[in-house]
Length: 64
Image 1 (cartoon, rainbow, N blue to C red):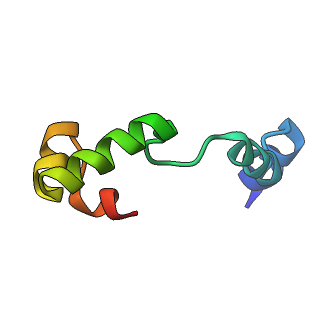
Image 2: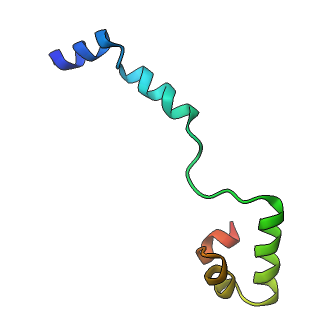
């Protein structure tokens, strides 16, 4: 219990940790609209499985 109180005095409180998390980017890869279009066109012309293998994705992420 004392260590929790000491952390608040030091400024390393839980609220400070929460505010830091809000500024971190969301998890997962983000693709530009052009890259997304390229992946989707490849999947449309071939197969989702082939597109996933070629671009290093999972088949599920192509559907999202």
